[in-house]
Amino acid sequence: MDYEYIRTEQAGRVRRLILNRPQARNAQSRRLTEELDDAFQAAEDDRDTGVVVLMGEGDHFSAGHDLGTPQEVADREARPQQGGLRGRYGRSYDLNIEANLRWRNLRKPTIAAVQGYCIFAGWAIASACDIIFAADDAMFLPANFQYFSVPWDLGSRKAKEVLFESRFLSAQEVLDLGFVNRVIPRANLDAEVMAYAGRVAENDPFQLWMTKKAINQAEDAQGFTAHIHDAFNLHMMSSIGEGDPDYALRKPEGQRRRPMVQRAMENYEHYRQSGQAQQ
Image (tube, rainbow, N blue to C red):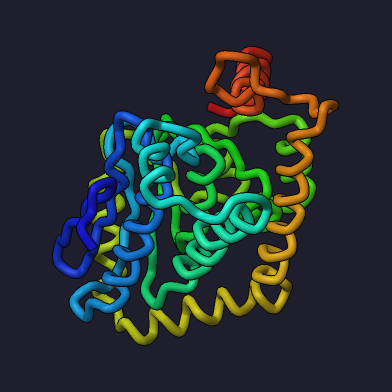
């Protein structure tokens, strides 16, 4: 597959997969997700690759789904899919559930390097990685449904607190909550990620795979994968409800920014100004 929205780089036994739509804050279009899925598979099949690092070009890791850039609209017109609930369900399931679960279960260690915005679908693809290193300027907004790993990422009680209110989390907050492994000065992020990845890649590939498999199986024994599938069905029900006349978060006429994201930033600013948010 030829890549338009990602690029790959090889540094020794480390394969870097780089989201390459900085002008769109690395929003995840259908095409980008398909390219990323292909690149993950190629890295898994390459015997000379021991570790996969996922990164975002520019100031932000990923601002979530592409909700309608000209490129995404053109792709939808060029490659139309089935309409109605059946089409929406199938498309969302393939791109958000099947793909993320494949990446979670890749036979090689995966590391996400997160800077700037990590919103909704950005959270999901970072969560699918084994390790997350965050720059100190990273801002996280947990995913609502779809690939709903948030209760596992934050714990059920904290997940409820954050999602009920809807607010961004700073890099330090998600470090304290256990979602990311390390917070690193922005200028040092790439170097520290690659140094760690290089050390991991020196280990035996089979032992790394078995270790990862055992840890993932521990989560699955507690219901992780079954929960991901069940929560997706609730997501589809919720998304249908957004068309109801009484839906409280309708997008204002003429605005592209989703009210939920705007409210999440306002709520974070409230916490920051009151001294409750950790910098």
